Length: 301
Image 1 (spheres, rainbow, N blue to C red):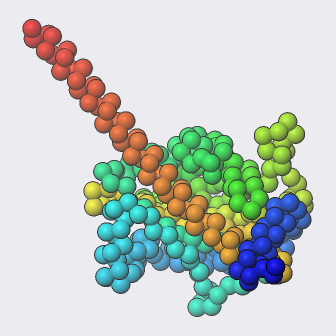
Image 2 (cartoon, one colour):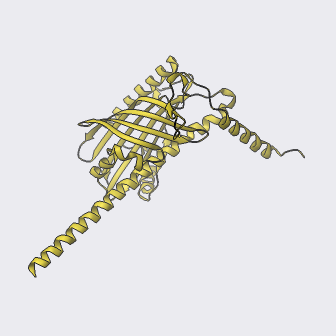
């Protein structure tokens, strides 16, 4: 009996996904023109971000029309995480990236009953990121700190069509804007794909043998304390290889959707970690006050 068009489509999709999973993508070289185009995109993004920090909007929802902006703030205060894709332009024109894909996503979350100091304490606890942000981060370590500058190692993990593990080094810089705002920017200085993760022969692939799942990664965090809590915004800009045109119609939308889920997961984990920290500190303070009260009562008696 002939397959219906819907069933045939499902069979075709399943076959392609199985084929992709069974046959790893061949090594992909980062071409000069690809890197140059990405550098142009980052340059344009830096210009946009600089303008936003000094002239507004500080959060991306602040540029929305008033009715939608009020609705967005209400959604955030009910616990929703808002995420959207960004397409930075250069002098009003899109930036084409030959042989590559740019993944630029931005999201924001509200953490009620928290302070800027508590939030930064969680974000800057890099040795603990492997616990806060698992499974996206498998291992983490603060390599060096000098004032507001950090050097950090993270082992990144993502499982989708294939499982990807990358050892990454980042340079991170923080800056304060007044008493209630802070920002940070990080850029990858080394990204090495890991083969045979968790096995005795686990090792990093040479650049020429890597698959191009992630060539570059920049992240930009913004923190604003107001409305009885802290708004946290994260923008992630990554560069990966493009996929063959014959399956691009299927795979490219999936590749572009993965960062949306990652942004939501990271922001949700940040909210949970800050909330847990605040709860623990409140509990410790209550216990200390109770102990002092019992001691004073005993002394008086």
